[in-house]
Image (cartoon, rainbow, N blue to C red; front, side, top):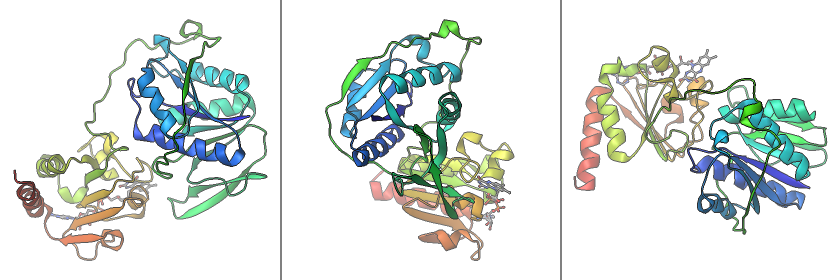
Length: 323
Ligand SMILES: Cc1cc2nc3c(=O)[nH]c(=O)nc-3n(C[C@H](O)[C@H](O)[C@H](O)COP(=O)(O)OP(=O)(O)OC[C@H]3O[C@@H](n4cnc5c(N)ncnc54)[C@H](O)[C@@H]3O)c2cc1C
């Protein structure tokens, strides 16, 4: 019996979200009195993989063939399926992101296993296995029971946090009985979008809404982000209008983030937006409407014109840093 954690390979590096999924898996394994193990596809140095041991992973199976450096949904599902059988896995944990969404439902069908997506906490009870997930834009929690022997869950990113539990992590190669050449489709080209500081991992985020008036006004927001080492984000209408990339869209239908600091500039604070940022530790709102709903969730508010406030804030930070 073991709990298997799916570790996404970010260009041969691990990210905070990998450690969060590992933390969750090892806590769950502890309560089930079994080991937490991990599987990772593609090339990654052992010195990088060893870090998973800091979060309770006692064995990592690596599939090092270069053909596994790019996600191929069907192929990766087959590999995880083989690991589940070999390691007598009872619970599989995926990140609730694009990669998890591509593999977890397929695995669920192949292994006839119950699957709950977007869980936010440890199971309420293990027998029966009942677990909570957010519904209605995070306004309510649903408790879902999984009845199948194998359970698959995907963890909402930034919902559980990191929990250190130092363990020796044994790294072993896994030779899958499938290869890239068996696949009916082949990825022939890949363009990687570089987003600077990754939004999902960022400690600080500066985000712009329709109150920024147009894409030509984003420079002061980007300058503030640069001086405080923040990632940039935006509301949905902003990315829908093509002012900013959809990669930056946060909220119910975008990314769900939980930075230490979220600065919302010209964002009204609609429930669908707040659903993606409400777990931020400190929310600062800049808005010229004192009645804007964003002030109801903000820890600090500045009432005024973003175009005037942003440069002043940047100058103040620079002066504070002695730049
Ligand atoms: C099913 C569904 C899903 C959705 N999912 C999302 C989602 O994931 N993310 C998301 O963001 N939205 C989402 N929306 C849209 C959401 O309902 C809001 O329409 C949207 O969040 C509003 O974006 P905004 O705050 O940028 O714009 P607005 O609501 O237009 O707000 C602009 C704000 O800027 C302020 N402002 C104007 N001028 C200035 C100035 N000069 N200086 C400072 N402040 C100024 C205004 O007072 C106002 O508060 C969704 C909607 C639906 C129906």
